[in-house]
Amino acid sequence: MKQSQTLIDILKDKTQDEISSLMSISEKLSALNFERFQTFKTPLTLANAKQALFAFKGDVYSGIDAPSLDAQDLKFAQASVRLLSGLYGVIRPLDLIAPYRLEMGTRLANDKGKNLYEFWGDDISQVLNKDESEVIINLASNEYFKGIDKQALNAKIINIVFKEFKNNAYKVIGIYAKRARGLMVRYMIDNRLENPESLKAFDVEGYGFNPSMSDESTWVFTRKQ
Image: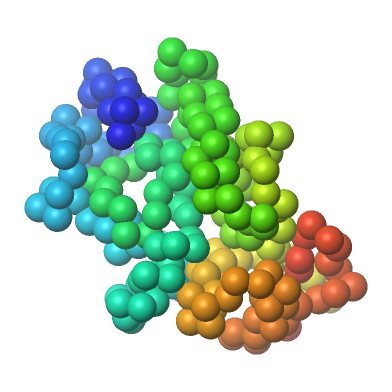
């Protein structure tokens, strides 16, 4: 929380207009987030925060469908899934977070540099190293994955790519790829997967492992519309 508080303190000094410009968001959203930064309080409790997996919205999280997970599912997720955050660095699914907006690619100047990548440095990698995992399945977007110092990471990384067949070619289509990343997280939770090789059986919503497009460090899953 110390690092998060450092960022909050920087953001508290910003005007609503500065937040709007920094994040390229509307007046309504900048007003909301200005208020969030000004009223941010610790410690985080269920009165002022939510568990991360239930707080985030969007295509990835619709694929995970957290409300339908049971207690044992959540226990497995807490042990196996890690979420990357511009404000919190690394969080577990059931960790409490206050509502916020701060994307990893935000060019927020700080004492360590000109953006959040320089702020976090190798901190995210060091937290991930504490899990002592031999393999990390990367389902993050490029923007967030850049927040990991790969040289400082002990685990082997397997990058997952989802492609759609469209106009006679396979290509990544953002909205589908986001949902697919969530679907794969849910697949891992539902099947209690611990062996990365088992992921190659992923076949949700028409996707399938494509060995001819994959290599040791990048696994490609494709589907035809």
